[in-house]
Length: 156
Image (cartoon, rainbow, N blue to C red; front, side):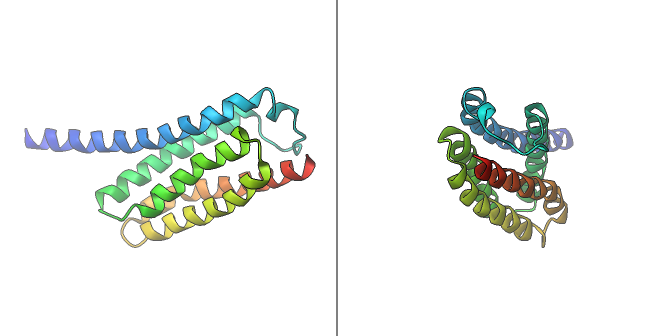
């Protein structure tokens, strides 16, 4: 009986961790969705800009991986300060770029987001390397997003 309860608590903690990260994506999408048709679609973009459905699928996957990383770090009682900071910056970027339609401010902010993701990876590494490794695709995508952000800013 104790073993089943223990497993269900862990599954609940995992689900909560993933849910928190997906919720961050949903909050950010509020700003994104309102600007896609009437603003973003009118911008000049580099030819290699992925279609919206690809970007959406990437973010859902990245938030899922972030949720697993959060769970693993939480289980090992790692300080989550860097994690919460980067998650907040992630949401803020969507509001700056899409909500306020300010690619230049978003570009400045994404620099801090990139540093915060790296800080999260470094802070997780000593106790739970797997959580750090799960964040590498996120760091890679934010690097690409920063490049796209810069090019969109430059082309418009």
